[in-house]
Image (cartoon, rainbow, N blue to C red; front, side, top):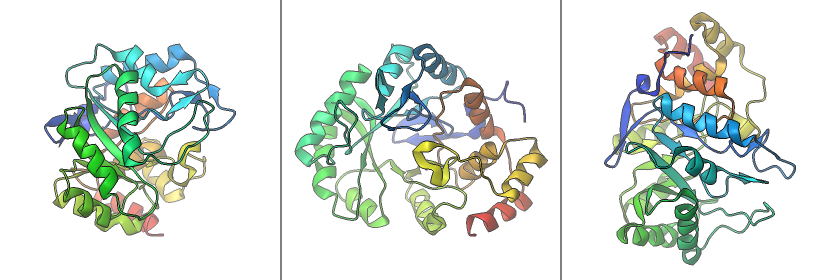
Length: 300
């Protein structure tokens, strides 16, 4: 499929609270470096290329950017690049960030933030992005322990006006129920894609029933995670792609968006051509026959 004329509004819109966004967004994890994110030997991405990609994304109608203060490589920070490329920010641009994990100056991972440390992480994002409030903050967690104290700390920052809306990441349905008892939740951000966590299908649907956006990460890379797509691909996915004159990555994104009107996509790239193709995937419509084939792959 051609990508030149396709813009992000082709995928439709969703409201994160009172913030209306196009369902195809942009993930900033891959911006600070070439190759694998968070690698010790990460090669910083050309600054001009990273800034050009961000500006091109906005030109294509992307108004939802997902980032984090811990997205950085030697010399490059995703938040700083976003600030340099896009400030003063377009009125309709929604920047979603996440807190919980942290990295020291050397890039080494720190212990996840305690409730007391979350304010410092929020302020770090505010400072780097040059904002006086954050549109959406996701609490990212590891494990199944209670999130009440940490989410409660973010709810207090929301009440103070530093945060507009709250979300949660890498969570279970039980975490969502716990969080919603404390403050409104506008999005859930979990790993999900074709063949990745089919057991989460019900959770994805349940989020929609509650009016909550489901924002899958690694929907293209799958088990490749922060290293990116491995290059290996199911023949069935390739066949659907060929039938539409599309790439397997575009099929994966279209499938993701097809899981429900509340499902958002945040594919990330530092490559201008990949960006155009990712945004164009929002216009790809899969047939019932396509979906049946892909569902068989999804459930293996």
